[in-house]
Length: 317
Image 1 (cartoon, rainbow, N blue to C red):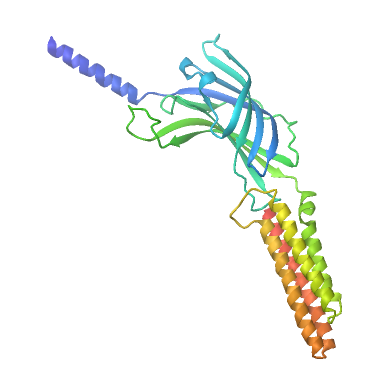
Image 2 (image 1 turned 30 degrees about the horizontal axis):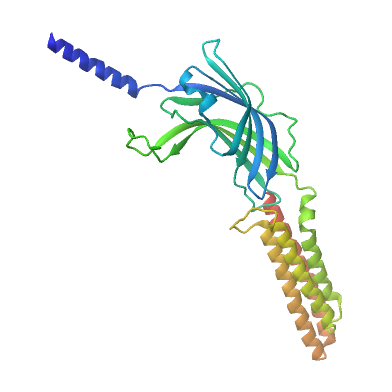
């Protein structure tokens, strides 16, 4: 009798272990409807988003009213929330306002595209207990959403996972690795560059034009030539500082840096060419000086326009 009880206990234990190992996590069917994206702060890498979120699940312990987590959010508040369990499942509906932190890619500014990322997690249950599924019915954002200076190119939602290399202080855990299921939202927006490009770079092009005019001033008029060239240098540098003040800090070389670097290099070449023309004039080679100015002007202008076009077309993709 004791042997029968022993083997029965072992069988029950093995069955329980097998069940625990093969446990299927509960599914949370999730949907989102974005009503507003606003206050895009390009300098501070921030934006605000308002949306409706709904979740349907069976396990009452999930309690998304308390356990909702939005990792990328700087702050988030619930302006409305409700829960209905009359059908045997828990249906949670809430309206959220979030201030999000993100990182912008500015190397192609002002022809840049940005990814606005948002993810939803349950702070208490990992992938062993909970996985997200997508509610595919209906649209996911209001077609009337207007982003000043931006256009919405696409919006994707998909389930995923996020790993944390920590036990979060749980004394029963020995492996510092936790994986949580999340519901990811990715909004791709592109900048409306119709007038913005000229608003940003007009001062830079005017500074190049001021320096370029030096080729059409008599070679022995050194004061006018060098005065215009030096003024153009300061104008180009000032224009760059104004643009940089509105952009996030970056360690990479951006389109703004490339075009301003090109402009400053060309202005320096104008100064060098003016010095060479003056030397020819001092040697009584006025004809050669005029010819040199003409050839240098055409070569420099052509090179400046071609390199500008190449860099801009490359940035536009």
